[in-house]
Amino acid sequence: MAITAEMIKQLREQTGAGMMDSKKALEQFNGDMEKAAAWLKEKGLATAAKKASRVAKEGIIEVYSHMGGRMAVMVEVNCETDFVARMPEFRQLAHDLALHIASAAPTYVAREDVPSDVVAAQITKYKEDALAEGKKPEIAERIANGRLEKFYEDHVLLEQPFIKDDKIKVKDLINDAIARCGENIVVRRFVRYQLGEES
Image 1 (cartoon, rainbow, N blue to C red):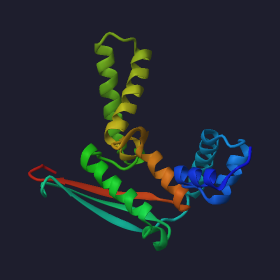
Image 2 (cartoon, helix red, strand yellow; image 1 turned 90 degrees about the horizontal axis):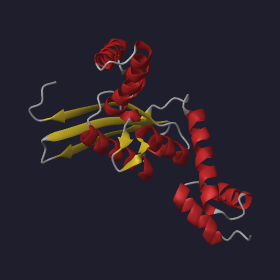
Image 3 (spheres, helix red, strand yellow; image 1 turned 45 degrees about the horizontal axis):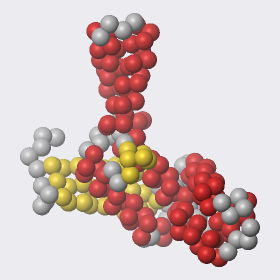
Image 4 (cartoon, rainbow, N blue to C red; image 1 turned 120 degrees about the vertical axis):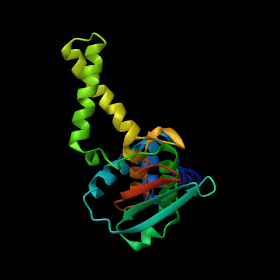
């Protein structure tokens, strides 16, 4: 099948990949748009994993205010260069993250940020609950681990389903942005204020 400029353009718009990568993907999969897009996404995720170790000190602090000033979010999103920090895609990502934090109210950025005593307390509680439900100890252990995953999904920003598309997690949204921008992107910290709320 002949690969047209229109097909390349369509795939680029869909995936954010470069022109040569889009052309190569379409040639590799004989014009199959879905397979080419899936391959480019997989390649982008591999790229994101490689970039994760690079230092990200540039970026933006996004501020979002909601409900007539009754709630506000401030989030620091870092990248490697000020060039990427000025890109509309990067600024949109920071805005989307602030909006998500306002809506989903996470407590921590990443799993690693959850204190070990909090994790231990949750596991103990979940095991006790399962045993009280009449489960065997080995089953209670598995149930506790499953409920801990749900705890992460409820309280950890990167593990939460993204509010604009609950089929993807926030970490997937960031990995897609890394693939598009070509730089490591890190959510450094955030704070969420609600009027009258105890800290």
